[in-house]
Each structure stands twice: as structure tokens, then as C-alpha cells.
Length: 164
Image (tube, rainbow, N blue to C red; front, side, top):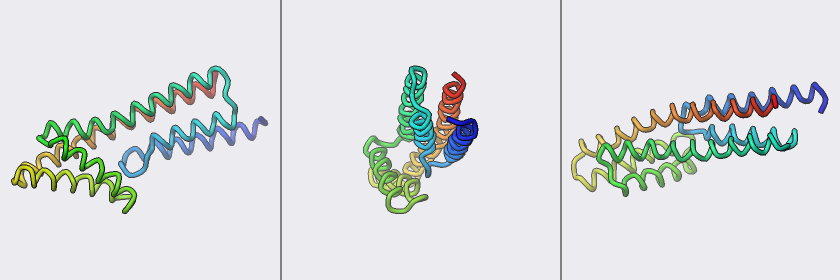
């Protein structure tokens, strides 16, 4: 690949990854998936060699782990705040449905509303339902920090890939 093309590829992939990293500050845009897709595009355009397969494999595993950890943070803090597993499952389903029905805010709104509603019905006390919902919100905050760390690690591994 010519020097100009290589530079254009690197800058484009890096710009997409930086967008993905910034989008991790919200729960609206799937930033880890954007970073992963940018790394995949880099590999498909540049071509995979032995190091590329290994490093892209690492990026993929970290992407999967980061995506799972994100859900675990929110669910575990809601559970610690008194939420039932049913409430957490409803919140997850509400989040998925809301993301499809009313992006970009529907996912987070339906997630919290679903958890609050199920907890209110279950406990018949809005204060306890609100406590569980607040706990899930705290988990969202911890998940943002975790997603940022995972996204940075993915980008660092890609940078190593570029230079090997």
C-alpha cells in the first residue's frame, strides 16, 4: 500500500476508534463495537498476518469481556440495591426494546422504568423501588469507567498491531 494510502487508512481507523471511545461516555452508542469494527476493517484492508490474527483475536476477546462486564456492573449493583433477578431481566429487555423503538434515549429510559415498575409491583413501596433503580444507575456509572478502560486497551492493542 502506498504511503499516502497507509496514512489515510491509519488516520481514518484512528478517527473512528476515537469516536467509539468518546461514545463510551453514553449507553446510547455501542462504542466497543465501533472500535472492534474499526480494527476489523483495518485488518481486512491491510491484510492479516500472524501478528494481526493474534492481536485482533486479543481485541475480540477484550471486546466480548468488556461487553459482558458492562451488563454485570449494572445488574450486580441493582441486585445489591435490592432488585430481583426478574426486575433486572425486565430492565435488560426494556433497554433492548427502547434502543430499537426510540433511539438514542429509549434504551436507558425503558431500562430504568422497567426496573422501577417491577420493583414497585413486587415490593409495593416506591422508595424501595427507587433505591433499586438508583443502584442500577450507579452501576451504569461504573460501567462507563469500565467501558472506557476496555476501549483504551483495545486501541492500544491496535496501535501495537500497527507497529509490528
